[in-house]
Image (cartoon, one colour):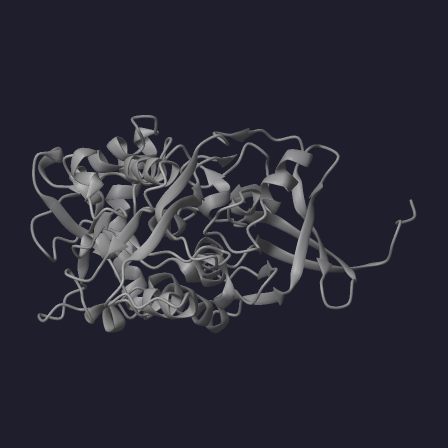
Amino acid sequence: MTAAYEYETHVYDVVVVGAGGAGLRATLGMAEQGLRTACVTKVFPTRSHTVAAQGGIAASLSNMGPDHWQWHMYDTVKGSDWLGDTDAMEYLARSAPAAVYELEHYGVPFSRTEEGKIYQRPFGGHTTEFGEGPPVQRTCAAADRTGHAILHTLYGQSVKNNAEFYIEYFAIDLIMSEDGQCQGVVCWKLDDGTMHVFNAKMVVLATGGYGRAYFSATSAHTCTGDGGGMVARAGLPLQDMEFVQFHPTAMACGIDPAPLATEALRGEGAVLVNRDGNRFMLDAHPDAELAPRDIVARAVYAQTQAGLAPALDTRTALGAKILTDFPAVAAACQQAGLDPVTQVIPVAAAAHYHMGGVATDADGASTLPGLWACGEVASTGLHGANRLASNGLLEALVYLSLIHI
């Protein structure tokens, strides 16, 4: 049978599609096992959308006070609107400390306490004593550039372990055998238009979400749902696609994608106010600004619809410290012509994360032989209807850990 067009063939043990946090962790994990591993990506790895992840990674390290993985799991159950898979949640919460320590050993430069421990900050929905205690400082952070730090570290480690990268290659379709197994992917090389076939024993999708389906989104322009599209064309089901999380404090400043005023700002004491100066979250939830994201997002949206111009006020809680402690937010404010030291930051709810995707088990295996998925493109049932804040980066790190060929 004659091919409809010329193409170049590549053969590997594993091909990973996507080079965000999940894709690079999968690439590194496979390469560390001595497998011939290729990673194909639309953009240079350190420019993947994970670079926009500011806040941090949830893990019950107890560096800033008492904590326990069971409390983390309970908060994940509650944050899912009680619709998540408890096995996946337990696996995540139990695995979190080891995942953070592993990143530290790889070289991620976490922020530190005066005692030299990994710094942890409070995030919305995180509590102690099964919701009866005060907000807990559980989120491990590298200033407000946690995703940036992770990408650079994992990319360097992957190169060190001889993983091969194909940069600016656009994955188009899965390659299916006659007996229904996934055997690789077809890619289009963006700079010269040539076609490439990557044959592999194992394909790992780590293509991220589909935020650009929404008018207002924090997602990069590369987040176009390519992985889900390939899986759907191959005849596999996608699960929970209606579960989309909206971040409550995207900066409403006319920049696309909308920059994040990270939740860590509220963890440090910043408050939400409207144009009349009213702190509206006090009437919306007992935890006010640190309520779960869906609750805060609905409250912000209601203020916007009422014409009350919701905004984040960091002036009292942080003052000039925002310039040094949150450089990414400060840079976004500068780009928008705002001075967060003296002005409030206009905010709006914007599409941020997708809980649904390719149905997988806790090891990242799909129902299609030869195909795995991890990160935002995958759906283990972990997040239910609403991801708990700072579980996103964690999810990218803990799954696929048991996979061997």
